[in-house]
Length: 366
Ligand code: UDP
Image (cartoon, rainbow, N blue to C red; front, side):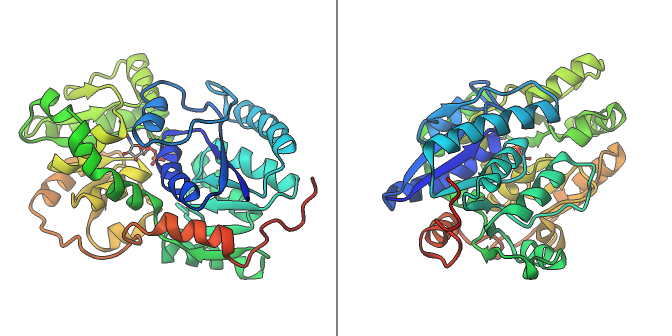
């Protein structure tokens, strides 16, 4: 039986991993999950494993609350030890966090075949830690599973045609999750009963480029405060953002709630009037649940959403955010276009990992 080690650590990775883990189980693959500990609060981690029925991590490195260097370094050391012991046939990493990079480096240095899910995405903004993590992970991966045509183009532009790695478009695994769990969310979530809001805008704020710049954060909060005068704004707030708002004495006038589990998030996405976010995943989820989205960043990796008019980029400027809200409110979009694979991304990914012609099991150093 094939043995895969999957590295996860942050909230979006739990959502993505849920989809492939289910496919691995169906295919009889032995998967062992390593949790780096990057996100550790119950509502940022455990709730996803419980609700989405993700196999419990076999290892938890409990690395969190450190600067980028120390965090990545300790993860690298911990993951290497596990890989030496487990001797997997392949290592699987998701997305663009420090856990992704640490897992990728550990695997590549031991010559263990490396799979990157959500490969090829670029913001072309090297100030983002995520952009650095993505570029480096892609460069040392053996199988690059890309969600979109744009991702494939990005890799080609960087010369990946000349690199010994297999590039495949499999679609976006987050759409698989949204489709698979939507009905369960209807049955299990009671968030709408708790909120009692007939109409609201759903917003999330956590990107470091926004939270770590008080001027930008003030702009965002001012914009959301203004929209909140017209329609209630509900924000399940990331713990980092909460801490910085308190430290900077920035006072939101809208509804702040604790981060919610995936089922509650689905129900919020399904019923809101619109989504305003700086998250990567939530931009796409707005589209999956047929909502206009405003992205409080200067650029996005999910350019097709902007090109098709589902998403407006505003940066952190309060006036731009409010104007985009008014523009989006009256928009009627047809969301039926297939941009992300319609729920088949994980199945395609696992098929490619198991029977695709790439370096699976080859060049083993351990
Ligand atoms: N999410 C959630 N509860 C929340 C906020 C987000 O379940 O309170 C989910 C969201 O639906 C998406 C994932 O977490 O599936 C995205 O994670 P995040 O925005 O933290 O990261 P990004 O996608 O920006 O990397």
